Image (cartoon, rainbow, N blue to C red):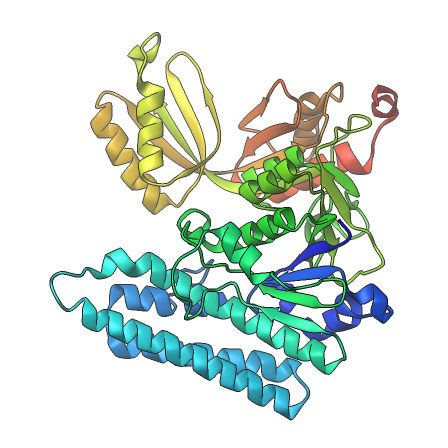
Length: 474
């Protein structure tokens, strides 16, 4: 257990030249460069072009191909991907021969993908074959192009700088037969010695499990966590372009936030629930069960150890993070609900069928309220299905926000009381608030326009200005 497995996200990858001077090489001697395995994401924006834009929903190659509006549209979009890939590595690679190799790599992969899609369309023109049955495989094929490209370019750049970098392609490109994720990783690492080589590994791994079926675009963290567990890594490290801090520094100020330094997987799960993923919960589970600690660092601050995430409890109670999320509330009221079973199960069945993520829920005698991470378009469908199920119920949806105060141990801190007082002092109103008996998070619900002010107020009260009685309670 002498090596680490380290993941770099897409935004950081686009600053690869800087990473070479800080993370990959920096002031390290050649003996200190190795015993590190890097898992890389696609360059920023490439996966959006290949699939669809993550935020705006603008269609990429996959979405255009799926709708089959025009063969020209998805083929033109694939051409745009090739142009974007070449532009990305053209800014990073400095040697002409390396640029030519990278260009040839892109041309070969893009041509292969194009031929595959054309052949599939031709095959599905026969009645025995249905295109929808293959769209999951197409999504994985296209997505893997981005990680393969970035890993290949990274290895070229490091080799030019004298590093024994090794391109490790887990994408299954032109591979015969499916294998499970474990065999895909162990097979690729046969004969690799991290003590004298630096493996640069694709964030996407092709396997029979089909990572995108469950994780969609969170697959790179699953690859990363399994690689760390299977190779017995000393630590798993995620490099971001910022430190894991007590709040968004752009919101509360650079001087006000505090780097966490240390927390546990429980807090990481709560962050994920609030849409602020330090790591995907399933990936965290893999690391936790394998006994591999996780570290989150700032890729551009190499001298700082970042934040260690393990399974240890806090030394003393403290609020660690304040974060917020836009939500939609679904309120189901029926006067005759009290004492009757089946309402909870029925509502949950509808939400599951529409793939709606539940952030939190509350209930009383005749009302069940779910706080959801969903679009209003999806909520209209949910409301229609629940109305059919419970015709006498009053069903309402509202666009609100939730702010959560999170910590490994919040016992004895009066977070709920002090939080409500801080919100009122800031001139805002909490529509709802809740705290579970485990005391790892306290949730406040308010109008969306109030969310930023509430985050600032709670951060100032509970983290920036820790009063004397809190120190004594600790």
